[in-house]
Length: 199
Image (cartoon, rainbow, N blue to C red; front, side, top):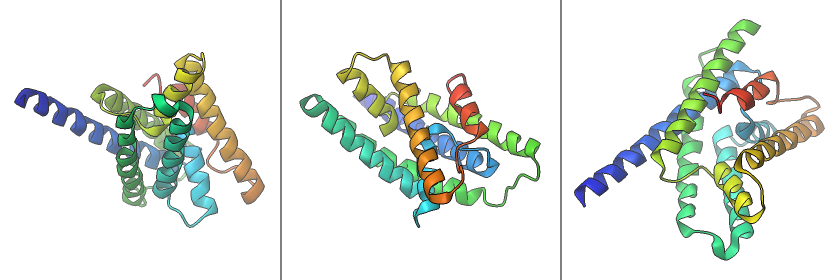
């Protein structure tokens, strides 16, 4: 029993460390100014359109994704997945902390922007890996993809690509309509989409 509890505590600690690493990955990608990762593109644009911080916008997006999972799965929704809510809160707060902690870092040229972007991609990749390895609860983004796979005959990889593309398209449209320019979606977003999984 003690071993089981100890193992569970270790897994939750790994999840928390993974979330912190991911949050700093998001922070570095924002600092790079080459576009954030697909999952962060919509919260970033929302933070530019409203008084919300990136972290708060991330939390709100995750709440919406949790509600969508419940609507999709209905009776098949496993109540344990409500753990995605505290995970979203922690991730949102850590993202805001990372953005604050990195405020002194700046990129003076395009090469330095790419260095920050690559650091961001590596950190997000490592953070996701730790989240998956912890095997406790997924973030709402992955939870949404899994819910779609349960309801429709779609492979996880295809559903994940579709989900990421949808977020990027929504972020791009909002950005172009309300800010009159493309914000948060650039070549770094494409690089993140391609290389986070590989990392």
